[in-house]
Amino acid sequence: MPSSTEIAHDFPPFFRVYTDGRVERLVTIPHLPPSTDPVTGVQSKDVVISTKLGIKSRIFLPKINPANPPQKLPLIIYVHGGAFCFGSPLNVATQSFLAPLVSQTPAVAIAVGYRLAPEHPLPAAYHDCWATLQWIASHVSGAGTDQWINDYVDMGRVFLMGDSAGANLVHYLAVQAGVNRTGLGIRGLMLLHPYFSEKVPDKMIRYLYPGSSGSNDDPKLNPASDPDLEKLCSSRVLIAVAENDSLKKRGVEYNETLKKSKWKGTIEFVENEDEDHCFFLMNPSSEKAKGLYQILISFIKQK
Image (cartoon, rainbow, N blue to C red; front, top):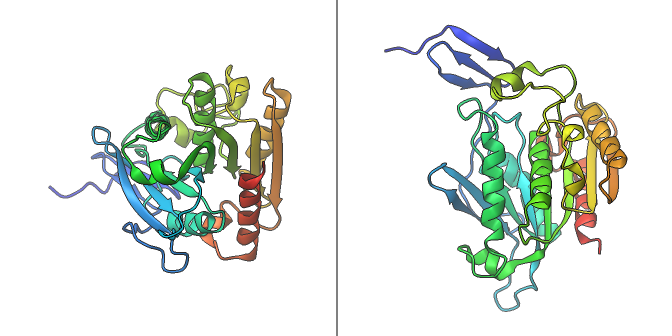
């Protein structure tokens, strides 16, 4: 039977759903197999987090001299964005963003995979990211299932980083890690161009998240509505926004929300002038992207 051409739901520029249930994504980013990056020497490999849920993550390891292995390195746990409905830890954008960061810091990075809406409605992505954080935490004793993590990661120097919707998921992880002890030494959060909800309900989010109002009264979507906000697991937060980004206001409001809350910590707020949403993914070799890399590296290296 031929596929339906009648559109039931249309959310440009992200996706449309046809009357037969078929989802057409309007944004596609090519995937790359795990490999050794030819420029930085960063190696990558994929790990299955849950066969039941069908989620996997990709680990990035800086170039290692076997004759002189480094002391254990900080860990960057990265959650990709994509409006909860596109993106992957396995695509070229993730590779292009993380390889230079891993190489220059140096650090190990884990790009977190999660099931995408609308096929897997929210809060599936939140649950998948939490499952991955728990899997990572299973390595705290040094006897986890992945040898790269056991051999090279300092579990006392862990950083959570995400962009756009991924920054929203990172905030969720940070609160959950504060409520539930993980054993991870989470030293900082890095939220890049974060997405959070506003008072006016977001129609697409309401479709992707049937149990939510899609508004600022949902604690997963809006930190100001979260009664556990003060339990945020890290005492340091970096927030980055871009001048021309339509989501800039969300990052500014997140900064103010943290300042007004009972959370006790320090905030580093960065704005890139004349740039738009997630410019560092679109053009990671630009001078401003390189400047942002240096800010992230400095944040990770601070004592």
